[in-house]
Length: 179
Image 1: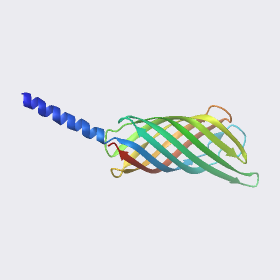
Image 2: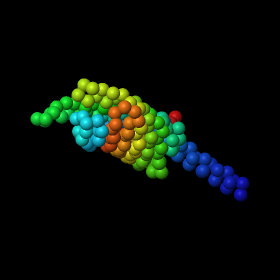
Image 3: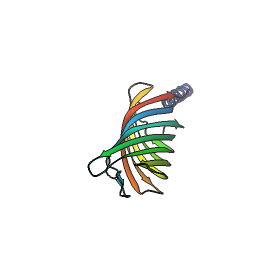
Image 4: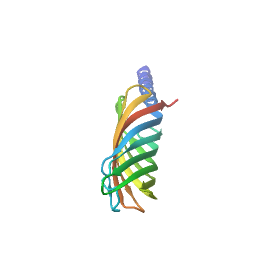
């Protein structure tokens, strides 16, 4: 009876350590992003202007569910019609909690709530403001160190220009396992 109990403890302990080793300590990703027709309440050319760009994130995972994410991104659009012409550029520097569901080793859906600074420049006029960004996505792991990431976010500013933005992204994720 006693040896059965010890074997059971060893098996459960080994399984717990193996599961703990599957959580990446650090995740880094780079992605293409697309912002389809964001809504600007400012009467400028950025209203309804599709923007294309990039996104990069760094996540420090503390356990299999909770991590902290730093995200930076940039998106750009150009209008050139008979009525008007101009450019729009948006850059974000945001951070906050990220929650992952790691039931399967091959994929990990996640949600995030980020807050930070966004800088927006439209036809030479620029403004920076505080914004919140809610979203999530899915990482499909193609190997122990690499995967594909896809997701979407909704961003709303708190101060300055009135502006809503939805962004979708697809890219590559790299992860470093815990030692």
